[in-house]
Image 1 (cartoon, rainbow, N blue to C red):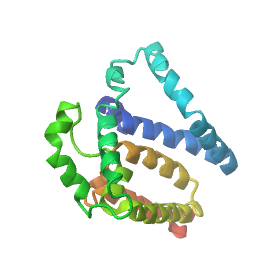
Image 2 (image 1 turned 135 degrees about the vertical axis):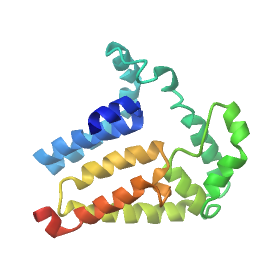
Image 3 (image 1 turned 135 degrees about the horizontal axis):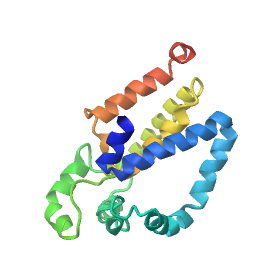
Length: 201
């Protein structure tokens, strides 16, 4: 039911994140070094994957489902990414304060709408950078990686979850919204994975 709901939702980011989780879970079960090598290979061949992605989607007759016409600009995300980056360059180190990114996109919503974008930054890391500067982003990444490293000592699920969520957070800004259900579920998952007793049982 979860898989059917995910497919019917048409959420491309969620579907891709789920596939990433299962792909890396498979390789990490075989061997952690193999999982790392696969990750490095995918990062190195990122441009090639993007180049042939459209052809693969057309060959599978999934262009309507994948909304191929909006894939190049990522449904307006390219506009938001560029706008966020232009603002970041004005204050790289400290940022504008908590809630700055949300306020910034609301104030410029009319201009961004004319350029084909709706909503906020659609990127957790750009939102954090806008709000807290590169210093805040570095501290966030350190906390993020340390927690998943602790979880990886107990469970092979940790790194596949990290990669899937990092991908999702790159296209959505849900991780900066502390009271949304996804962030709460992530904290619960991390709490369970870092508990040796839970994983042993």
